[in-house]
Length: 292
Image (cartoon, rainbow, N blue to C red; front, side, top):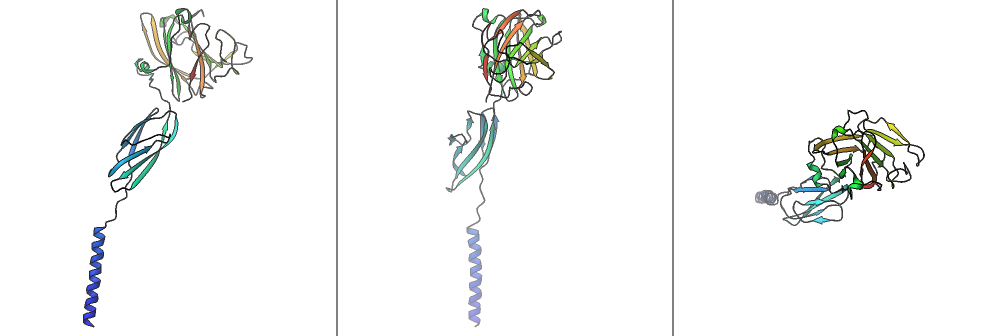
């Protein structure tokens, strides 16, 4: 009986020892995760992947495109929400993944408070009148936009002190079914008129927003008391040529939250004699795609 108890005790101790050794030889593996960060600038997203212990990666950008780069840079074609998933194949062959939602939207490089017009050098939406007869004193105009503003750049042969009057005719909903359809500028239904001494705000005629009312054939506009509907940025005058930038607030001019707008600009002297036109004298307005 003593021998049996001794053998049983030895067997129990041996089993415990074997179990302890088995636990030491097969430790519980830590849970691995994919780790990455995103930096969004307009439609371009930079992915920085810091996942470890992986031999390969595959990115699903959520727009039917993918990449096998470790840390790719991806440019989306449209704004919106995109679910991005990173698949990582670990060195042991296991595949893990992680997802995030990326928000992309149209942004603009234009800064109105930097005392510079250099940020307009990259803007490709440019209007140059076909001739001096069509453009008059207007030499060039450029346009950009983001979710907050419509940006306008103009180069005009005038002196700021001349107190010229600017008329912005805006078809804010890009529809001829609303707004003024007659007058000097064909091809639009002008819902709003912005008028005044844009570059000389201390003059007798401030820059004011007017909304069309009544019959579409009637030149009938009521003034609106809406503060902050425009912002004037940098103004530079060199040798009788003035270049300036401004922004129109999309939230304070009704209709500019849509997918498109039409715009024509007439510049006059202080006696309302027309001197310049954008895109040109007697031409239809330009159409801006503001859908992205």
